[in-house]
Length: 162
Image (tube, rainbow, N blue to C red; front, side, top):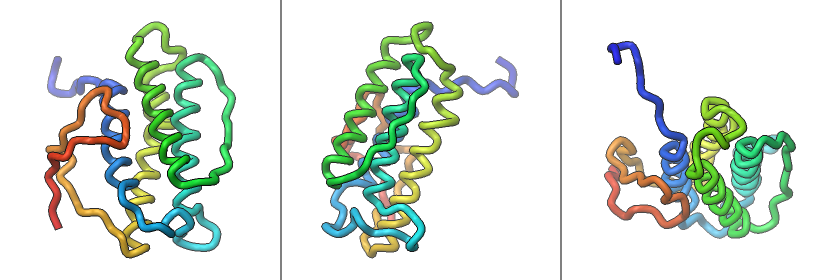
């Protein structure tokens, strides 16, 4: 490999990273946070979480060769958070089965639903600060990200700072 080539990042690592960051952002939110929004024409926090779950469910369908999109109607914060992490688990398991059985390119999965979901985690972190319940900064470079760990329960060893 010459100096201009960059090795690919396995999608399962991207998913584990998304789960780590999402868990940190979704953990211990204030009771009324679900309906917090930045402005009248923006999504509420629960609508963002529901959209993230929709994205990950769609990614799994894309990996299976399907194209349909489902737009869920959010009802309960805990239900939507659980749905998001359940979708993450299914996608991770699907990708773990491997290579040639995936019906779309890894690049498309990353550039579409996964990158979009990462953006929404950042939006939720910003909303938490706006709502007076910010999360501590962290050196994510040093975070303990583990393949297959895609639920709310993440490593307690982190590198937070104020």
